[in-house]
Image (tube, rainbow, N blue to C red; front, side):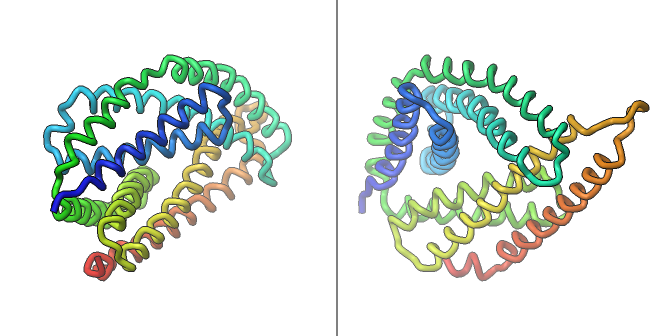
Length: 281
């Protein structure tokens, strides 16, 4: 049985990305920047699946050039997004007003550099390769068998679950959580496609769980990013040591972060080290 749903699914992801880039060219706002980053994350997950379905895809100039363009946009959009989140985080209770003011001034200064750079990328954006990429997906995967697509989706989800299981073992580090976020995105994007090919309540439950963990790790990432930035603005005394107020704030924050890391890993380990989660699919 032939199937073109994977082709349609990929092309919709590309169209969404292009639409948001066009919106940004007309009148960009903070939400559009965020949507572009979300689109790119989903496209990356689509590419992972495409490379499993077509071993030659990773060697095509379309993939290589598109991936480079996506990475440039993603990195610059990320700097703007992080700056915006840092500005919002300065309103958190407990941060000394002088430190908050210094952070705001620094971030606003950096935004003066990030925004023009991002605007330049968007204005110079070449959509031709992405339109060609849509045509590639239409032709290359239109005749892919439904059974093969389903099996590959399932294989990818199992692979990502096992990677998360491995990452929850051993030392609990921030680096591991960053990797887990990517695997969760791959599971969610592929799971949504697989659900279109073969509706399954257990699969829907898995997608919902993974989306919830994605949100938790996203919130954690935003907090860690701000905390790292905050360290640059700690108040020092005349001898170059942290003042008592900053030292206490820093110590309390470190304790909270360590506890949050422990809770997140315990949560992920409980979910993904349960063998039932794979058997249920």
